[in-house]
Image (cartoon, rainbow, N blue to C red; front, side):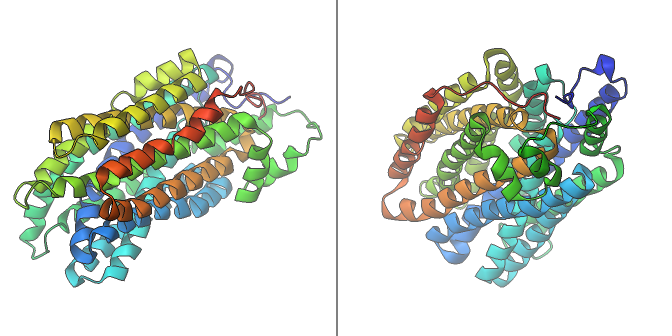
Length: 437
């Protein structure tokens, strides 16, 4: 059995400084990328609603989520072949291109261009999500949850403030002759390009390639002849990833936790700006949306280090179940808030906390449940599944909002959690591949 990639640093004197440098760099770029992603999400639904109608608001958010999911496939392939650095750079540049196209769509009011732009804008999300896995390539087993969660938490600094920059961005770009709501996407494009540039120059040595070299050096001359070894060596496709995940209950549970938590969060969050638009006029709707989404994002990220610590201390499944409970509470509070903004804000905070529990614990469980050589592909498969789940939720949410209203949307989101509860209560075997490098 091969030595784990994340053997403690006392036997790997070169790993600890690389890991510290990687974490510092990812922390900084997550702040920048968080600004880019969140400032666009804050006004994306409003922009789509004004250009193409309320139902299209959900579809625009869905396009961004689908884009993040679809871009995870080529980004994962790039990472498998060339390392984390080029994959992250390509994802951020795709997001910047999408932001520019959204600005052009706002100027021309050309709806197909808006959806294409939102599709590519998802590249920013894909990069931010893949960064959390980059953080654990060289992490010690006992610290995986905490180090992954620190990178998730880093998004807080940029993301919490970003929605409140929307009005400022509009004022700045309004002087350039751009229409309302285009400005935030200009800021997003700049943020994504900056994050890509920093990673391109400074993410050296590449943590994934370093981890693979260490694993190859420690591997036995003749690896055991298991059916998974060839798939792990190929490690570049979703099919190979699924073959590995299919036989590992812990990995399947990790993917399910991440996907369902994201589905519920996107369904409720994506229509919250539209809900607020029903009770606030143009004069202050951006300010109110900025405050509410800032609180929501604080719930998603601010306590991520605590969630990571609990994940390492209490176990992955316990934290996932706690996240599920918070998601149900969030749906109950938000769905019964009416037009009471403080109560709706409280529901969105709970929604963010529940997402954090399922995301951090689920991602950690998944990463440690599969062989090292196929990890990037399995992580990409998880992000695709998560993205498609969120995209479906975002697409349906606009129609549900128009046909039945926000309370029914929250109820349906709560019902979607039930299968994950059933899966969580089943016995999940211990992690099988911590030592399978």
